[in-house]
Image (cartoon, rainbow, N blue to C red):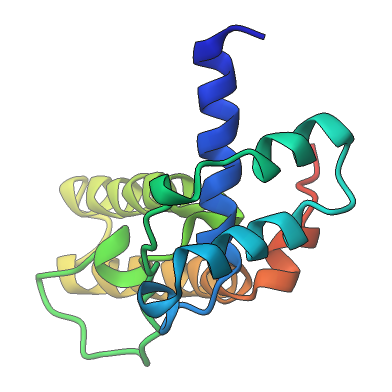
Length: 157
């Protein structure tokens, strides 16, 4: 493994501490505590990866709280809507944020095309987009915010 590849692996493992840590208190945790959390998280991994985490220079650990948006109740639809992180910002632990935002864009585009073809009124199309988006995005948002669920998730192919 090259030094550059090794640095990427170490960076990836270091980010694990933030995903597993308490969102509200991560910024106040001491670097040594985060390092221990990282070591605990990988204790069942292979010896090479465990060794990478054990050898992390504790002075290079930078605590960072990861936040999320809580699902909001349906709102009165207008000519203005939201998509992506504006409505369902989520931690990276589930790996679904960007894909969900792209799905939002495709769903909204489909509805706007129907408006352009005079098949639907604008506000009705936006309301359908918002209902559809809440149906697929909110469950993903909840799952991505539950560390145990996110760590067990195995996407189907």
